[in-house]
Every structure is written in structure tokens, then in C-alpha cells.
Length: 106
Image (cartoon, rainbow, N blue to C red; front, side, top):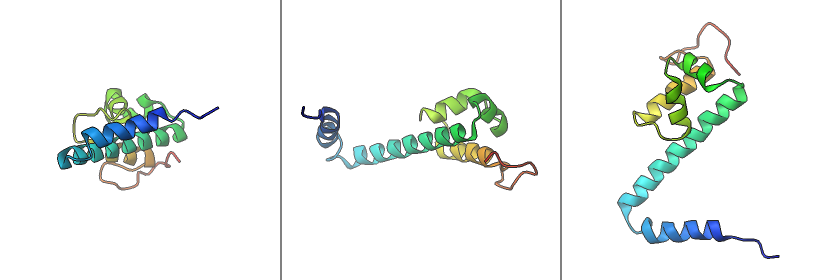
């Protein structure tokens, strides 16, 4: 049986047709791809730490909805700054990037 490659081919077709020839669209696509990569990394780190969104929100000093929005790449604020703040919380650092006295989560 032939393996179905429709999805990757369809994605490539759409990229080539609607994005590839427009530098602004390419830049927007790349920005959104970076956001998606960061979102996945935040989720993966939280999952590896074995903590809930609520617990991470408490550690980062933000609302749980912010964690959800970051993990879904839907955060409307300064995405990278907030992701960095969340990463610091996951690593056991304070907002200035200095190690807290408590032990790191992992």
C-alpha cells in the first residue's frame, strides 16, 4: 500500500503558493514558526518537570491563562519576554535571572 503524503505535499503547495514569493509573508511565517517552537519548548519543559499549568503560573507570578496562551502560541503580549520569564521560573530563577535559594525544578 502506498503511504499517503497528502498533508506534507499540501502544506508545501500552500507555502509555495501563498507565502514563498512574498518577503513579508515569509517573515511573518518565520516569526510564527519561532513562536510555535518556543511554545512547544515551554510545554515540554513543564511536562518534564511534572507540574501543572497552575503551578507554573504560580512560580512565574502570572495567571494560569498566560501559561495556556504561551503553550498554544496565542499570547498577545511580548511573547519572548514572557516565555523567558516562564523559563526562568522552570529553571528556579527569579525575574532578574538570578538563582533562587530554593532548588531548581529539574
